Image (cartoon, rainbow, N blue to C red; front, side, top):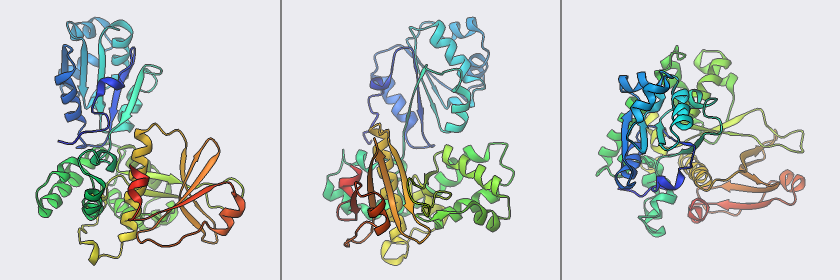
Length: 374
């Protein structure tokens, strides 16, 4: 059992607001919810959005039915709430007409659940996101030396809880393949707007081979033999079901700064490697730099999300090829970060230093990456 950042869900609850817990499948949302319910001290009802009767009641918008459903309870918890039509309207009725009842819901698709809860719950919700295990969370069990010793494991197999506890290398691979084929893509392929599952899977593989590189929608469309608008829609869906994270380009002053393209990173290295069926050890691979960059970027994004970072995170590149992997901006202050698998002397690109002389600069390597992600 790993201690999660939101281990005490009660600390995240607010009066008059539904607590919505987002995150991909199998990251531990249900476990976290059940652990909280066991110690919360409240009379609770735990239900599932896949329960047809529950879905019927909560989507009915019938105040009396919903009041009867909640009667006698202090807390209502709905797992996989995205399966309930008009769930937002049902939750609004609870908040407005039964204010003494607290509500927690989970969802593995921010696309579905955000659409269904968006307008009805404006001002009435608090949302948090649970990711695969972050280095920040693993540090509660392992010290820095132990985390560094396990770096290759995380680069190859990622941080899904079921993978982290799998006993052998073969077990980890089996869990990841099941995870990728049976769970992570289920939310996407279940959407009726996906006309070509094969194109979607091929898109994921192309993204896996382009981690850390700029992505061109037109080039992807050509390779997949589909139109660029469809590629853009698929990319948006992949981000909303927590498979990838889009990183846009940064620009403020220079005409030759690239902003029309983006980079895509996988929230979990293990999923990325499962998609291309490559779990070779680092000594036998030529993508160590991409694996390390993917891990560092996403671990940093997890850390910032858990710390309620309100700034912007982007990358910077010029048409001449000068590039910085990450740019963080908070209150106008810029911080440039270069990510290198091997320790080496790096300096900010000349054009960046000239255009943004007040920006700070640092290099993240396998030697110091824990300072950046913990």
